[in-house]
Image: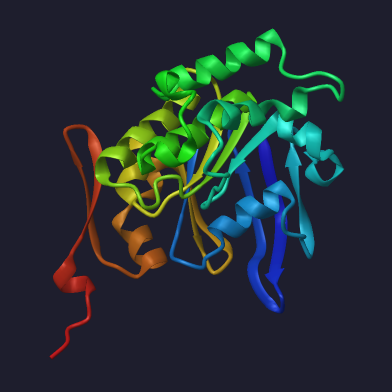
Length: 262
């Protein structure tokens, strides 16, 4: 559904993506993983056109992304950055209504279908009873679910999420990742998500793309890519990768991996 070809992106004179090529499969959840500064967030921003490419291109259904207008793109791809902000006085319901702007005519507002999408998205994330609440009254976990509801109500085929579980405790990390998995399994979305925790990737995603130094180091189904050899090569840490109760686990060997200090 989405393909990136020979993509080169710089921040000033510093190269971040250095000829990256990758395809993303329709209807699957793909995790982008790798060390800090390897280009994960940059790749999402470049896909959305927020960062100019020095070389290469991004294609959506074979069509160059640079040729897709912003309103049309908003109908096809939803993007959740690391940090999301809105006025404290805004209610959850008002936030969700913003998701449909790309579908509204200049003279009209939300249609009956739009309003049904708003209600359904809040029900999916478990916040249907909080539509009238101001955003500053929601907990951190609720706010993150609110942003995911906004993306659901945008009603796109593809969803890009940049570290959606950052700053959340374990309970809400798993709750949010469960919602993300639901986007694919029940709603047919194609999802690309930036993650730091490899165990979240093995539990909730289908495919993984390992990045380092602005390049794809390994990519494919989770069970084939999350290996001790790949983790050591990309992250520089020794781990045990094993299956427990049918689930792939990645456990660092602290004694072998951490530097010894006096």
